[in-house]
Length: 420
Image 1 (cartoon, rainbow, N blue to C red):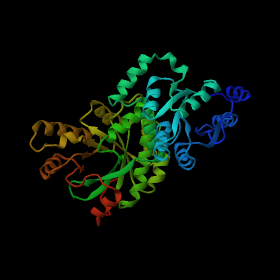
Image 2: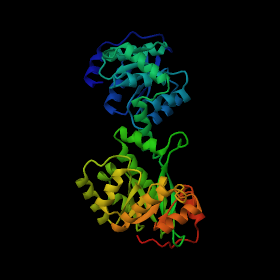
Image 3: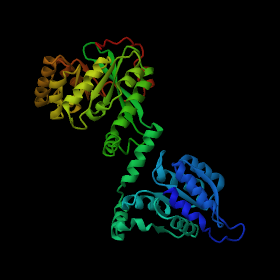
Image 4: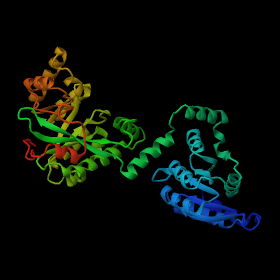
């Protein structure tokens, strides 16, 4: 919505309604100029009463609970969960209020997401003030409507989108706001899995992982993939890594801690921030295989910066992805992490032993130490130790758990025997 357009609407106030029957309006928009322009527009209408203006869904929820508005005008794209979160907050505290969505988006998916979440009207920020006022008045009567600006998409397209939404598909808007909510509220929960020296049985470090509140329904991999699909992957990875290192303060000081970063995230990685949070603790960055390497030359610079800052490199999931072998040869990492699929039943699977043996020999030739992931039994452990794997991790020792739980479970093993 342009403030110039709103100013044009101030010259023709609507006829007033009888006293006590004004439509009580709450505004929620994070852009201060839009919020001020909307406030002035509503204030100049005799039949409307502005009861509050909020900058985000949380503040909007508090104001809605206090003022019990008739109509709430909700911006679609805001911090702290956006319009979908605002509609959720309003429904919880002011169930009699109706909502009008206000957006710069005109795609069917966004329109459908907001309408399905409870908005009865949908207007676009470039609509004339008269259209916005009409939507507010219609909403007060329980009537809905969609801006003519959405007309570029046929009603058939909207109906199709509604059908898809009804079958459980999630719109792009819902994904965007779900990831925004996780980032804003720092909802990546750090957990750790010990890394054990196979010769001595002593813990030398721990891999930091991330879990999310609904991790039993949606895996961490799904969360990170969704963030990457929306262009927010490196941001979520960095935030998760910092959360891991903050929580690692509870672990024994002699342990190293590893964090996971994709090649894409490593290109944007603030290594100074990671090492600052790690303090004096040895830090390992595990390069994951969840996204391809775009430019090896640029990535090599990032690896050099990482090592210059005192951190070490590990290549994750070696043996599961062909590109991981190329990375081992190119970067000569301090640690090579064998994919967990190799450890499973390696004591009785000759082909797995042959492949793992070749990878361990490759690591030895590049000066890398091997961590075998996914060890679940004493016989798997014995096989990998006899083949020359240096370290191991897996359910045989511990499921991923909080730093406090891991530290308590390994009490007395503070000194470790890490070469890092």
